[in-house]
Amino acid sequence: MPRHIVRLLVLMVAFVAVAYGAKRYFTVDSFYEYGHYRGGSVADIASDKPKYKGNANCQPCHAEVFAQWSAGIHNSVDVGKAVKCEVCHGPAGGRDSLGMFVNAATGPDHPNNLKLAIPTDSRQLCTLCHEKMTGRPAQQRQIVVADHAADQQCTLCHNAHSPRLGLVSAASAAPAPPRGDAEQGKAKAEVCAACHGPEGVSVDLPGPTLAGQRADYIVASIKAYAGGARDNPVMSPVAQTLESADADDLAAHFSGLKCESSLAAAPPKPAAICVTCHGANGQSTILAAPNLLGQSKDYLTATIAAYKDGTRKNDMMAGVVKNLSDADAETAAAYYVGASCKRD
Image 1 (cartoon, one colour):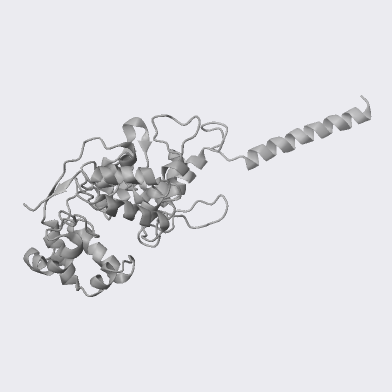
Image 2 (image 1 turned 90 degrees about the horizontal axis):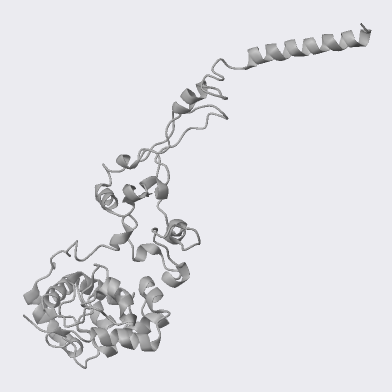
């Protein structure tokens, strides 16, 4: 046999021997135990400290929010909708860095030494699932962001933990009883009659109807005028003279004056945008919004104009009315004028 063939065969045998030895030496025993990977990696991965703790970990400290989530659309597992706490707030656990391919069984945990993130831009978060796009399942609520709320945050109108419920509902969560004394408030309200009417009902007067308005909204409005968040040449100086007890007493008095709605069940289209917060019958469906029952057309159109030009500031209202035409504003205002207010 030629010498060069012998050398080639020897080289091949040596290569096979080295390769076999390397495979036996470098290949771990658990390789191919379950498939074409190291079987022991399963146990190693299982020994990692978990990052995601699950919703049950949140329940003890956040029972109220957990209850909202549990009853809401984000917990509809039967239809494949399960948005868990850590999807929005990040993992409730962490792992210490021990190096590449080194498993960690230690690390921070919430709430001990790890603070969860509170999302500040709900538009970026909510639109991950709800922005209208081709191919997205029709069963999943979709919106065209620019038309739906422009640059307003989703959380202005929606409870992040149970979006379908909106903000705190006036129907499901009754406001607390007025803190003030209604009889004291009646005496103090004499100075209010020139603008708001002797019984809190404004007829051809510059101020809004206060009869039947929610007490907490009246108090908040007085504080806004007193602190400068709202500016009005008449109300601002008046509010600045009132003590907290005065505001509570006035609120107790006016909220006790009842209004009866005579509004149609189906509002015209321009007024429909108001119904979500202010109610089809003029009584607000969420605690953050005032009743519009019995307000005058002039007052409502002037208020809409003030939100549009920035004279009166409210992020949600500014977004709602900015594309509302003057004709639509007139129609919406005319709808709520169809209510009447009277004392019991």
